[in-house]
Amino acid sequence: MTNKLYGNLIFELSHEGRRGYSLPRNKFSQYEVPAALRRQEEAQLPECDELTVVRHYTNLSLNNFGVDNGFYPLGSCTMKYNPKINEEMAALPQFQNLHPMQPDHTVEGARAATIMLENSLCALTGLAHFTFKPYAGAHGELTGLMVIDNYHRSCGDVQRKKVIVPDSAHGTNPASAAVCGLDILEVKSTAEGLVDLADLQRIVSLEGPNIAAMMMTNPNTLGLFECQIPQIAQLIHDCGALMYYDGANLNPMLGACRPGDMGFDVMHINLHKTFSTPHGGGGPGSGPVGVREGLQQFFPVVSPYHGNFAVILRALAYIITLGRDHIKEVGPLATLNANYIKESLKDVYELPIDGLCCHEFVFDGLKDKSTGVTTMDVAKRLLDYGYHAPTIYFPLLFHESLMVEPTENESKETLDGFISVMRRIAEEAKSDPELVKTAPHNTPIGRVDDVLAAKHPVTTYKQLKNEQD
Ligand SMILES: *Cc1c(COP(=O)(O)O)cnc(C)c1O
Image (cartoon, rainbow, N blue to C red; front, side, top):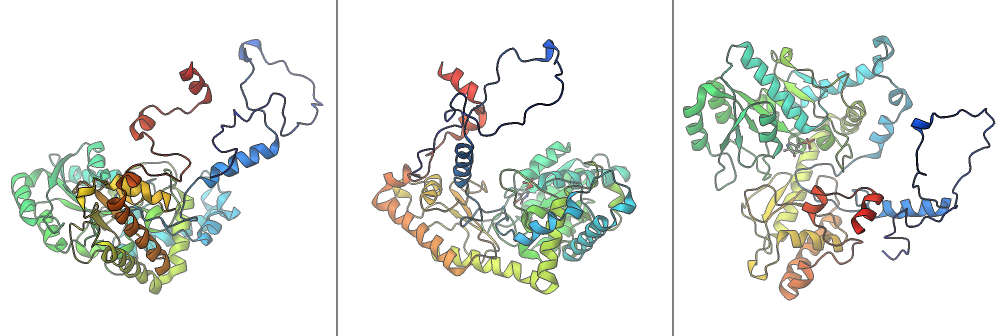
């Protein structure tokens, strides 16, 4: 970016005495703030004219990358299509100005909207009741596991404290189980990337009476449809445990099949992923939890009031916009797009598990390993070409995982553009590996030290000055 203001902090643009605004003269009598409450030194605030401030922050915002300025192939994170009408609905003043303490009879519209969404989710999942209190997918997992734990306690089965989780699972699954005070039993995947039934049988015969639940994602995090759910559910139910479904990315299933029909008892949905709320940078989210009839009395209270209402509204707007017929097209189109990219690139990128994928798939780095170019390098080089990076180094099953999810709404031209850039990077890895290994070259900031940035973030200007001292 050739912008001479770029790179300066607002503090560095400051000139003493410069003003961007002026307050009206104070016509009221003076009030003396007690000395003990007054600053001893002047606040160190930047002093800039209005245009400098506007340009500084506008230019900073242009360094953001989002779905509105480019293709976003991040896998396991369905959030790439956020229709603007949802934002309009969520911003209606009749919704936005509600207060959670308002008397019930003044918020009947909001309650009707929530009930409409609950009915839609029940219809889409085959479960009987939903709670909207959880604020995120992981919060939903914890809530769902608490339902399961409460259920077992109510049966006097207090020893059921173990949860079976596939080795391909999203990291939040074992983490939520741990937060809920449950231990993890990891079940292996087969070479085809599906749950290893023999390993599951072994675990169930060893631990049966101690098992609280099995957590599954379907399609799993490799983008593969677990076709043995009925056998798995039978095995789990026969030993007295419940089936938990991680529906963070429910989109490929919409209108095609339902977790409730497959034998799942409890599930969460990430409304912010599956039903379109922009949530980059950590929010906002909503992870409603659904249960089979008879389990609703075990819902714990995990947050005050009614959950993240604006996300509920966006999800409802998304579902109503598509309607019963068109919602069925989401999965097939996302699946078509993912398979198109996969097939167009698998001669240059390593595809560890071949065959049809669902809405996402995983490469294990470049096919030609002799160049030394890693998945990290490919991801960084993509930034030079104006693409967001895919999910990298997840799932943990492969060394060089690179997980792509295009979603349903991308045009063929967009997919072709991404494919050609991915192929070009594969060529560069051979002809000029240094170019790829030192990427990105065109972004305002090159490679940052992720660990340093996470462990010792410098978030104040003063701190920066001190460190230079
Ligand atoms: C994103 C995701 C989660 C966690 O959801 P958060 O809202 O980020 O807490 C859980 N499971 C799967 C499969 C996911 O993709």
